[in-house]
Length: 136
Image (cartoon, rainbow, N blue to C red; front, side):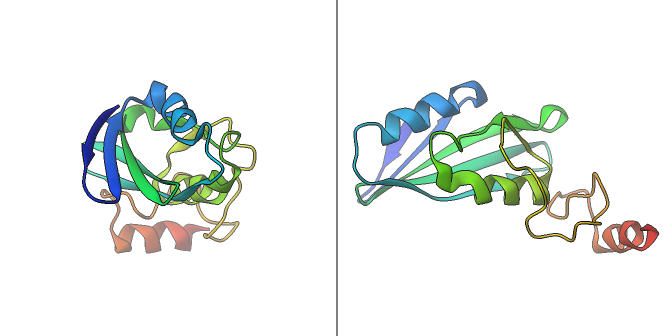
């Protein structure tokens, strides 16, 4: 992981295949470590998944770039159970698959939301979302 530092925040970037090891190394040996949030960004060319992890009151953000054509990353829910809802939210809104996630059902969108329609992807417009939702 590459790193930058400021007063109470560390930032870094890692590969998809290394995210589990990075998270495990961050939380290992501490009495207090938690996922603050997991979010994503659609750059138009790729996705970036950003993990914010608080370890002993120092927040580390870890950024992982994911190709659009293979939008998947391993789950960290077995390492940090608190990641469960954040991964579900990112999956539902961006269509990024968290491999091995124990409960990939809908979290925010209605159960009858159209498959393959991810509202925070850049290629979608509000008109397209309405058009697809009305087909249901």
